[in-house]
Length: 225
Length: 341
Image 1: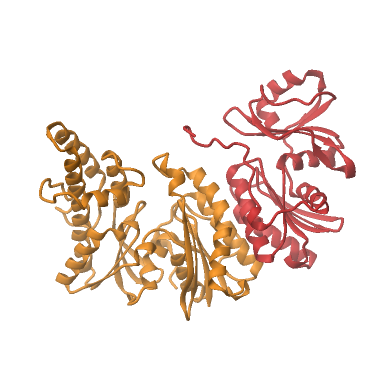
Image 2: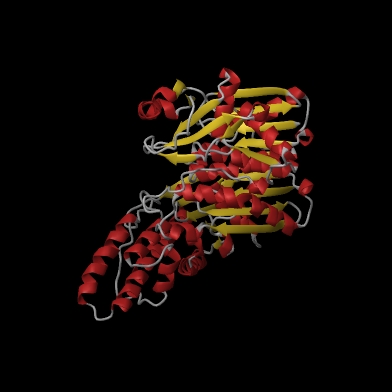
């Protein structure tokens, strides 16, 4: 399966090309330059592999949660490219991709993924290792205060992502000895978006370019609304 | 050459297709006005969120209307500034990626250049050089345009844009959002003789504007007159008329001055306020006295639209200009920085 994936939801901008089982990625940790980098990365990966967009089976993107603007950049780029090349699109949770990345690098099978959502809240999700070495959601993704996020029922867990840097103390207090390790500086990467997208696509889960939308989680964006 | 244009700089999603031989083939605008109405102004995050929902469906709709395969599009133009940065990013990302997927060149267009060139979609079209009044909710500028990309700023508003003054004054008068057009409708019923508002900065040389004092003047007049009137509706209409007369008069005085200063006989008027009927009538009268011609876009192209971006994009793309894969819209962007064609 051939998939080109992008993620611009956080500090890093990355693009990854999956061809069969071979995965290449470009990543730059340059906030506020995602628009300047993302298409160049995508184009570079295809050129390096010597294939065109039409050889792909799908485009995938980190659909959030994350920076509103960042998530929209990936969504819009993928909308434009998928419409232009008539490709299916696979939206992937950035929290799931973060958990998948932590499994890739540490082998952890129980991950609590958290991004800082500002305003005293975090984006939060629990992930368990499932079939095919893929991380699966153990509950719903949510935006909530560290005091209110839903903790998993049992077992020992690893905390991953920027949310743990900001709200680590409260979360540690709530999890106590069920917390094995905390790694706040792990980023969502497009190579993990690609891996999760390949599994989704194999199941027939995809959307059209026009149906590709961000998932913000936070819907209240005005003081009165 | 056939160019697709995409506009997402504020609260309207616009898409158009311009063909060098056949002119404008199709265009469509989706306005977010209802989304922002309850907040009394544009909420940038809501604007960006809506552009993500609307841009691609609008592109599909316009291409269907054009009735040609998408392979027949030779280039993509998108608004790259000035405007709301989050909103601009959506159109830039969709447009740049689409051009990449199609394997055609792309170009980022200055929103105000789009407005400036919009009258060229009409017949007869103005020819260079001309003087331009760009007057909208975000801008009030007088420019001398020698050619595409060769613009010299003659004067601009030092505070509120004319359209912004219309909207804020409408709010003072209790009119619903967006207030500018509602104020103009109310002014239709007003007596132009009852109140006289100042014509800011017309008593000194120069081509700059200042409109923020007029809304204070409106507020003071409204408070004073409301206390003594038996017909508050009549008073509000008369005040609306006096305000509109003051803005229109000021714009006309400065346009006359600009034409004389540049020794030019062509005036191009663009931007949302350019649709104001009283402004058009007064500019036409002034132009007749000056032996000059005035060029306006049709009213639907005074407000934000994709047709003007497609046209400006066609002008630049056919001259061989294009952008790399990097897109970097700008919230601020002086027109004088634009490259000539």
